[in-house]
Amino acid sequence: MVSMDRPALIFPELAQILLLLPNAVRIFLNSMRFESALGISARLDFRKMRLTSQSAEII
Image 1: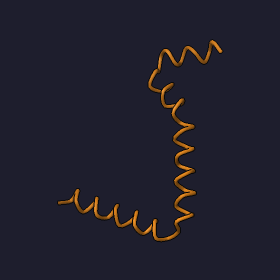
Image 2: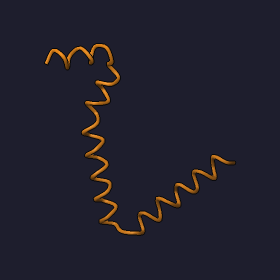
Image 3: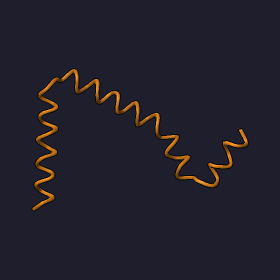
Image 4: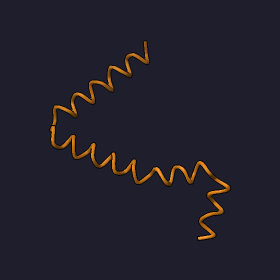
C-alpha cells in the first residue's frame, strides 16, 4: 500500500485520472448500450452532429 501512496503524492493528476477511469468506462459502456438500443438512427444523428461541428469549426 505504501508504494501506491507515493506515486499519488508525486502525480496527483494521475491519481485523479486513475480514480475517474472506472466511471468513464462505465459511462462509455452505458452509452454503447444506449446507442445499440436506439439503433442506426442515433449513430447517423451523431455523425451528422459531428459533421456540423466540423463545418462550424472550419467557418
